[in-house]
Image (cartoon, rainbow, N blue to C red; front, side):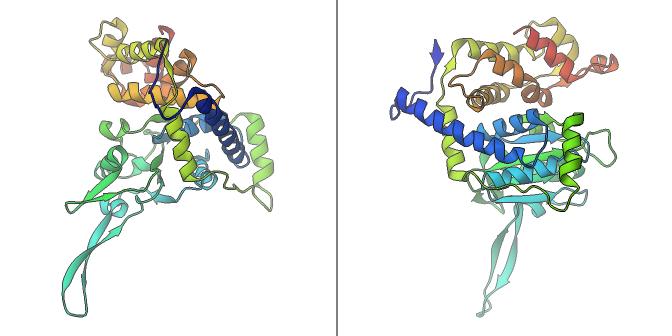
Length: 334
């Protein structure tokens, strides 16, 4: 049995045909990114899944692991209007959102004119987002959830599609601020970037230290990306997958009858995590050429979807546990 978001305007055969076309387009995107980003297949997959699901992603890793390069490459490959903001301690909210300036015409009449900030783009790269103060980080809250910003009481809609890909250095490094919990929840996934394996690093050495570097090419349009995003929202979700998502997310919350969670988790994921896991499972299924998600998709995506939506108790941290450890235990129970 499946739960399906019904759309009377499309039949089953037409949906299969659309899925096959979308899969071919996704394959082109994957190949286009692979020409520039070597190795890191899991990172590329998760980042593309986040975009296909229509959400935002937080890329976490030490400097020098091609986080910025990946975002720049995706902007080119997907044909999106991309802007980059380098977050620094002195960055102000108006530097991101824009501001109003007073102008005077020839008749001497004064009026305010809104000058849009870099957030008015289809793909915003928030580079080293946790090097800005929490006040500046919070400037993204409304835009990431509601896709518009309010300046001086006036609403300004953002272009569609709108995605934020933020890079973050580990909190243990100098000059970093923790992101507010409310903002972390806006990110569909937190994608941890690890060091490349030796073969990928060998290829990096050989192909990036010569006269010419590989360059990305555009293979998709933003309008086509939106069509694929709508297709993903129409994909059927088996009843077993829905139950697995509910069981997993609810088991990560204290006070739900799970003794391990009650002991180790201070606060857990809300309903937005269930929504994110459902959308990402659909997107991953299509990314791999399937027309419906499976429980394996839920297990594979549990860590990037849940880890930034949970906090450990003091006792758990004192024992040397991490959120990853807790999520891994919960996944085993699915």
